[in-house]
Length: 111
Length: 115
Image (cartoon, rainbow over all chains, first blue to last red; front, side, top):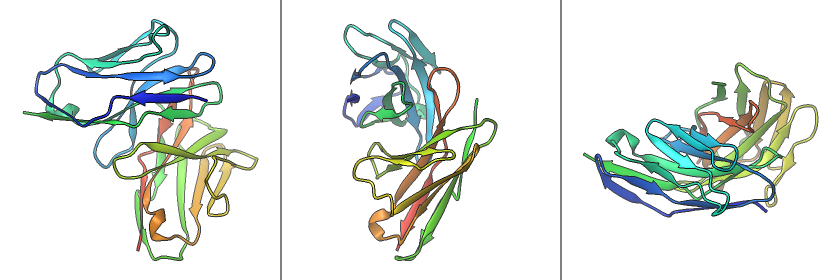
């Protein structure tokens, strides 16, 4: 079956630091890959996505590249802000529309 | 982008009562919706797939008689937690797929607390 393995947190950074959250996956077929963000007390928001190999998703300074050869979709941001403090989920979906989530990584950015 | 709403956003109930949670797609039609639950500081666990016009499909380990799902229309799915107990306290989130890349849009979630 499908599965997502995500770097465990929590991660604590200073403002303007570089952020990387590792994500690898196992899936049949050709899944689409996503990063979702969840702010305290809220539901999930789509941060970025990639639908095929070598695609790069980007949004709000975050980037992730769909690497089929390493089955990875690592999230990066060059300079984080306090407002980036949240829980980040890596996820994939196959043809059945069912999402498989990673465990989530809590990121705290300190001023 | 597409918008999914949930109602209520939070509910507190006594043990033994039933609670209904609504999930609506506001600007698109969804023949399929998904229900998840999330325990504190944990990931989302898929509970069931709600199908318009047919029975819901439940994931392994989820009691279908406990968590009743009705997909009444192309824009509404409801989850009823029957005879709720404190262990049912959780954050329940729905989602609906829209667009050509299997993208899902999530509701804001419903916080259920059973006393």
